[in-house]
Every structure is written in structure tokens, then in C-alpha cells.
Image (cartoon, rainbow, N blue to C red; front, side):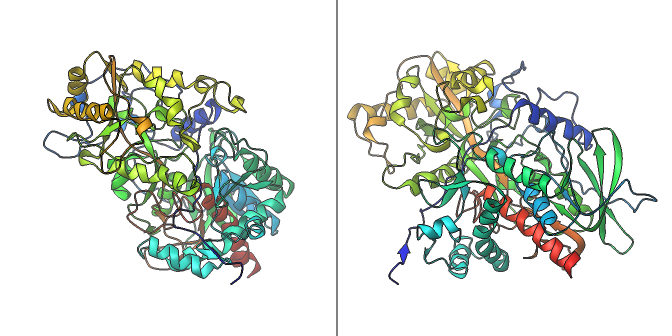
Length: 612
């Protein structure tokens, strides 16, 4: 066709960084307590707090990612906010209900806000319950919303993937090949067909979108291009306001504790802990929609359902909840599971928990951003690992895709950990590395810096936190650094010698060479080293749903009255994916997937349970 335009596999979105401020994080911590999450008294530190903690540092060789015999050493459970994989059983119908509604939405993040707004727009009396003290969840913190075609703004640019004009069938066929045919094609088709429509609907609700530099992603119109912190807050604020105008009742600081199931097996309500105080029963006469996120911060669930993330990820940066209670509620009423062993990660997850620190970290905590620069990176055998450049250059799509590709590289060496090494001159090299997207270090002069928690407005603070906690090891000799990172004698020292020889030649002959301008010797003490892995930002295993967003039971039938959006639901990228290809998490990127899922849940719940 005359307007046909074909794009390479790499013509993809940017999936950006997340953070949560003290108020939301504190609410998340309280949520875990209110929801019955058991915390060991001896747990070190507060997972939701900023900065480092006073800890007793174990010897690194005792906390390395794997033992000397090659077996994997488990995560420290005390670093996690939750560590329980048991199903949460439903409650029986009470003698009297405390609240009545047509539809109850659990979660007021990106998916929940859309589900509640859509349900109310279509005529349902809707209650939305949220554990935190404010709306937006993790979605407000995202940088970009990925979309491969079908949105009106993309139509204006004649953009679609894999070719223009947009075809949901063509996109589904391509995506199924990318997912190695391990996904439900009907569900993938639904995302492809409705993804653009869901974002256009949000625009009708008041979200002001703009296309990104690469037309595979969109962001709120007024968000800054200077860095990626809280770009999506404008979108979640707009959807919250729209829901209010449509009559949605929001219950904040009121975590869901259990589903209510009647004698016929239908889900008819939710039990909440209202204001972290007393239990209240909400009667949802037509449907309950679960949209409270996944379980990035639940060690037991990761171990059981996403073992590659449990092994290969060194941290999570979703700090608002993600403890998996909604997933466990679904299991408690007989739901099946989809998307086994799939997750989404960025590169540069810093292994705080191995040194007694917290698992969930703010992405822009300084140390995480420093870890994502092109340092000498080796595995425990001393082999160099490839780096993936995020400078846009001529191909912005490759730069975006590098963020997930590097995660896989860092998650899969022996022991599931990688090691970065640099010397005292590291700060002199950062400007020359010029990494973009969410690898850009935060400095006080950035636009809209007031959106960043005060402690992290200068990346140096987070690095100093890591040094103080001995997460970033600072040693006077390479031999000391080698021993304290758990290497066998001569492994790290030999790797640095080879690196310095390459730097002296001025040209890299490695299979995947560094640019010549990035070749800097590691020669002057103090020397620095850090253990890293993947930086988990989305669980892709979750409750099995059909293309109507209905939760499916292990008997192969829908569980009456129960719906789920991503990431409580799974299956959006099939099984056995380290980073959820093809777009850094799913067909729409994580925040776009949540938005789309909420829109679909609200639509289907009203049409199936009320209009029918």
C-alpha cells in the first residue's frame, strides 16, 4: 500500500522509572501489617524507608548469590515485605453488609482507577478500595506508556507495528511468535485490538497525551523530557478526577483482606480493613474486580511462581505494595494461574538484601543509577559481560530495548549475579557515557526536580548510602575487593588486568566491544565493586483470565462475579520470559497494560453482569 511503513523488531517503547514518596511507602508498609503479612521481629530495616540503615554486615562470601559449590543461595526473606504464598480463603456471606454497590474494584492504581471510572461511566454504582492513602499506586510513577498502534495520535503519524496500517491480527501474529506461542492468542488479540482504544478513552476522560520521540510510546502532555520520574502522575490524577465526577466512592487506607463467596460459589463482595481499623463487608451485587498489582515484593510467591526472577533479580523497584494479597485471594477461591515463570526487569538491580538491606528500592536512589552505567562487568568466573547502550543516537528503539536486554544478561550468569568494578575516577566518566532514558542520573538542576524525594535529588546521596552499608564495596586494593565480593583468588584481579590492557590499546577487541571513548583503566585506589542482578518491575505470572477478563478456575470455568486486570492477572506475555518481551514487559508495556486491563475489566463486568 502507498502508506505502508514497516518497522524493525526494535522499534519499541520506553518503559521508564518509578519512585514512591514517603507517604505512599509508609502506607504500603502499614498495608502489609493490616493485611496480616507476617514480619519477622529480627528483620533488618524498614523496607519502605529511604536511605540506608545500621546493619550488622555479614561476610560477603556468606551472602553471595550462590555457594562455592555452585548451588543457588536463597534470598534473605527478612529483606522482603511479604513472604507468604498460601491462598487466602474466602469469607462466608455475612448476616448484614456494611456497604452496598454494584461493582467493587480492589486497588486504585492505574488499572483500578480505569476499572472504577469505566464501571461508573457505564452506570454501575462503584466502590474502589485502596490500601494506600492516595490514588495512583505504582502507575503514577511510570515514565512512558507503550503502544504498538491503533491509537488516534499514531494514526495521524501513520505509525503501527509490525506495519502500517494497523492490524490487530497482524500484531497478534507477530507477538505470538515473539512469545514462542506460549500465550493465549485471544487474550493477546484483545490487548492489540483494545489497547489504542483504551488510551483514546482516557483522553476523552481528561488525560492529555502526547507522542514520545519514538512513536511507540505516549506520555502525559505536560510531563518533562529531562528525566522519567512521575511522568504518569498527570494521567492517574486525571482518571481519579474523572471517577469522582462519575460518582465512584473511594475508600483509602482500607486494604482488602478477603473475598466473600456465597453458597453457589459466586463472588459477592470484599472484606476490607477500613482505615486500618475494623473489618467491614462490602456487598458487590454484580462483580468484584481485582486490580491491585502483582507480587514483586513477596519472596514466597516469587520462589513458587517465578523462579527465574527469584534467582536472577537482586531487587525490586515497585515500592507501593506488590505483596500479592489479591493474587492469593484468587487462589483461595480456586483460580488457576497463567504466565508461569515470566516477569519484567530492568538492568542494574543492586543486591542490597544480600548485605542485610531492603529488597524494594527507589529506582533513582543514586546507587541503582550508578550501577547501570557501562562499567567493567564480569561474572564470577571473571568473564566479561556485554553492555547495552541506551543512547538514542540514530535508533531510539534499540536504546529503549537495551534496558531489558541488559537485565537478561545480568540475571543469567552462573550464580545469577554479575559484578561491576571501577576505580576512584568513576565520576569523571559519567558525562561521557551519556546514558539516557531512566539511566540518567538525578541531579538538583533537573526540570521538575521537586517531584523527586529530597534525599534523592542528588545521586551522590544514594551512592553514599550504598558505601555506608557496604553494598558498594570500597577497598584500597583489588585483592581486598576480590576477596570481599566472594571471588576465588585471582579471578577479579585477572579480569581487571585484561581490561586495562584493552584500555591501553585504545580499542576493544571483545566480541561486543565498548566504544573507544568508554575505555577507562581501573588503576587508582580506592577500588569499588558491587553485586548486581535484574531490577524487577513486574510479575507476569498471575490469575488466569479469559478475553472477557473473567478469572478462570482450575475446573476450566469462569469464577462467577470475579474479574482481574493486570498485574493481578497473568498471561500477558506467555510463559518463561525473563523480561516479558516484546515491549519491556508486555504488548503495551507495564503501565499501559494496567490502564488497558482496567478499562477492559470495567467494560466487561458491566456488560456481562449488568446489561446481560
